[in-house]
Image 1 (tube, one colour):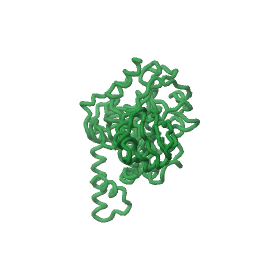
Image 2: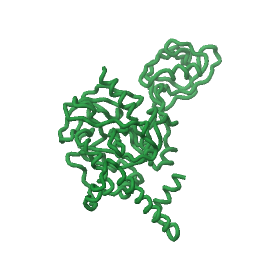
Image 3: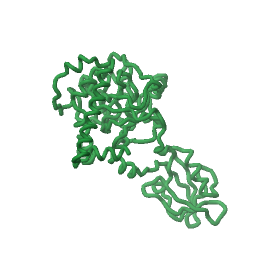
Image 4: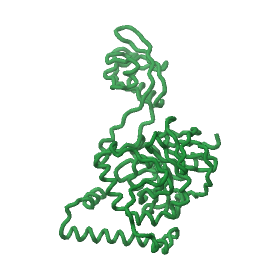
Length: 384
């Protein structure tokens, strides 16, 4: 039903009774939004009344590097982003600026030459920051709110959460508070903050922290199909996956694998079970029979590629977050962030940090690492 409603709202051909219903719905949404804003203790009513008329501001905040080139995004995704900018007026965003203001010196950019590829959040006055780990590599720099670009040192990484802690030579005053997730409920307004306290966009919390079914495999991947052989020891290779660890190691269709890392193989299930205990990057030793000749090959396990085409068709993608799924518990909200907005904080309507945006997963779904997991990662990283 949600998808059907989205299509009706976005459809340009609405007439008659449907058009009247659409206008009425938008008026009701506007009234509800204004009522929520007026009732918020973080945004006094006089601030709303004194706001200047909305203006179109297509320029990024001062000292902010340009985003990744839109030419790398699909036409459908660009149209989706433009529609979001049209729906969330500058006037509405301006109402939330008092909430974002305390983060004016705390949100940094990850920069590749002159392009922003992601964000990070400064968490203490010693220059420690957290960001999306899969975005970071040693060729990048951190652009501070002052506009200065500096190198960063990696302090810790967590591949399961896709989080990294870095440290830079920067010492701002840090005084933000963490949200109480027990008081954070589906339907709450969320504010996504960028450099210079930019309100990137607004969203609504979709669901409490939970695990989602779509998980990126974390076990290693050899890349062969096998079958039981005639002999009691050894399994026959019936297929080798293109660009897999097995192919790189030199395994061919028709080979017989008798041992893996010293373990004798009598059935394909033994190979599968053992490889599933390993992680990408682990190395295994394979004893292989080929035309009655025995050889020893070494393979560095890779990662199984997940076909996300069904998810992209459902959600209107494709999207380019380097890691979209597999974070364990996440907060899901409906703000359609660009991938280069990941790594920044998401706040509640009182200005407390609810989590860190970690993935643009689907057209109407962004994932954030919840505040409690984020705090635990920070404490563990600083204790090293």
